[in-house]
Image (cartoon, rainbow, N blue to C red; front, side, top):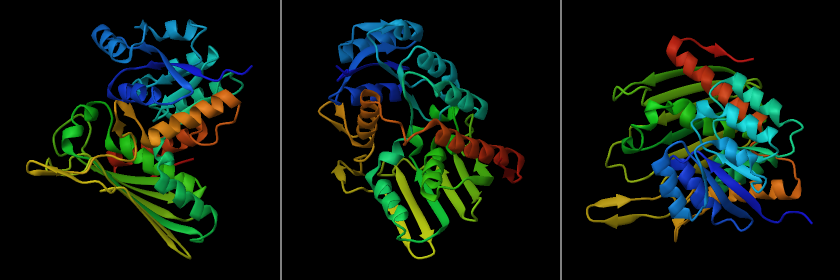
Length: 335
């Protein structure tokens, strides 16, 4: 009889590893069975929070455990290659957070390791599970806007979120990669050149602002705005928009002020109701749908067609080219 429930371990317990765990506990055919981080205090804290007994500071312990079917890897992007490859070699199903890696070479190595592996490999590009983008994709595939000729996106977040993040990753690879992936998905095309400029506002390791332009092989152009220093009074968690211009129609996607505004004290706040909203201690939204998809593919032997490593590597390559352009001031050709 086929396994009806995946026992999954989370490797990496930063803020998003915790969000993964809070999501997994709400998915009926997933069991949060193990946790791993190198920090003993954090490991004990998360073990107590989720009631998980299998706790380890070495991810190899989880990979050696025959009772663990799958892993969610939430380590930093430059620490993805080895855990992902080791997990695939160990026969585990792998949910790997985006970006797939910190270099194109590592992304390709992870992709190669997934070929012929017993377990599936899914890359966590959560925006593909936002229902607004999914409906846009359906309309595009139905031919309702004709040939895509131009795209533009905005993905901006408040400054308070980002000081620690900007010590580790910049806004283009950190966030514009979402819109890059969506644009590649919508067009079914490849990006052939990138040009970008960045702005350093607060003197952190990485710049606060990224402005990117792409050219697609089929002739379409794209502009992407990513600002990680929105003022403190900004009422929303994310200002997210995209326009897709076709020869026969236009699609606008907007996820700013997505239908909920809370005023308390002297502040208006519009919380996330799309990606991983919290209800009674459990995360829902697009991230939950993403884990449901992952579990369904793993349990029923279905091929991964969303969040493939090939697509994830293409998005990584384009955003790394954009960062190179911002450093050098020249257009960077891709492929």
